[in-house]
Image 1 (cartoon, helix red, strand yellow):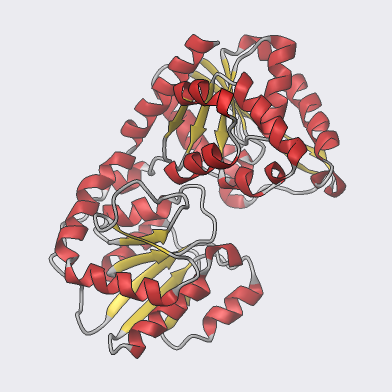
Image 2 (image 1 turned 120 degrees about the vertical axis):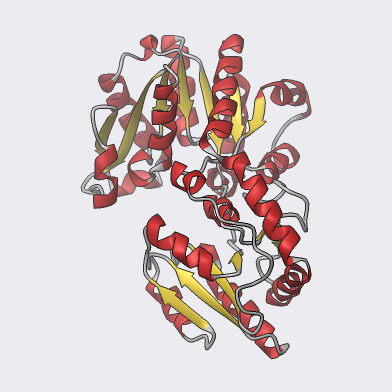
Amino acid sequence: MKILYFCTFYHRALLFRQQMDALIKRGHYVRAFSSAKYGEGIAEKFQPIMDEMVVHKECWNKYDRTLFFPRQWKIEKELQKAYHLEDFDLIHAHLLLSSGYSALRMKKKYGTPYVVSVRVTDLTGFIKLPYFRRMALKIIKNSSGVLFLSHSHKKEFEEKYLTEDMKSDFEKKSVVIGNSLEPFWEEHPAKPRKSVNDINNIRLLSVAKIRPIKNLTVACEAVEELNRRGIHATLTVVGEVQDREEYEKILKYEHTEVLPFKTKEELICLYGSHDIFLLPSVNETFGRVYAEAMTQGLPILYTKQQGFDNNFPDGKAGYSVYADNPEFIADRVQDILTNYEEISGFCIENSSLFFEDNIMNQIETFYQNSLTRG
């Protein structure tokens, strides 16, 4: 297959290149198109993925962010300069409305079929407006396949936006496939844990960019609640500071320590020295960090009806929690402590579901089935 990744934020995420490389190893031809506003630049850690396999164009200005159509037309102009779209078997639009809108227009012009991913930002943005809701349904209807990264988000889309006449076709061509882990985590499995490291000091870990949407202050409050209950607990927050005000709030909590961004080689040591992984994000498309924590035997606490929820029943890999309820989170920490060995073992055993080969087998099948629909 010849596949084009139409991903306007390719230059800000390593995941897409990992998928592309995995597909190329399987004999497929894959290229990417990325766009950005003028002067945005590319962070140093993303420079290695900006090579001959991707065309990246700065082609819109700060005002275009709120002007949907002018922005898309500028992106489409550069996309058509970059590639002969009729030469590809399939376009993968990695956002429902922005990428999906242009993929639909390219299908009409060049006849190239497309599949579309639906992310959490697609469910919280333009789609709430009636015009864009109709557009989203048109994009879905004309697509050859629809990929969700979360069972919760697929259900939400079906219940809120899908019309009755579309349900049958939608079920045939829609799938839920989570993100794959980096091979590093498969290569460094942990041994099963019989108990927490120190029963007199329960250590919780959060790994995330420090910004309000990650809801880290609620994680801090949950740890304070545990201490009020007589359970000595601490929280370590690891991540790049993207919101200074949020960072200052976190620093005020007595039982919380904040560490800067860590490489995966450094992070694996932190997973080993902690007992439970907690990240009650307000919104989350998938959340690879939960799967990372599972490989190291950490029971996980994740937000109800967000990205990672419904991969496993409650009580198996951990628990889903209400993002705005620190008392509820503290209750679930106590539940984990009563059954720690079994939950930790389940995490290690079932983290393999997110290993690269398992996920890429599903994605490859999704592409092949989508091509049969044309």
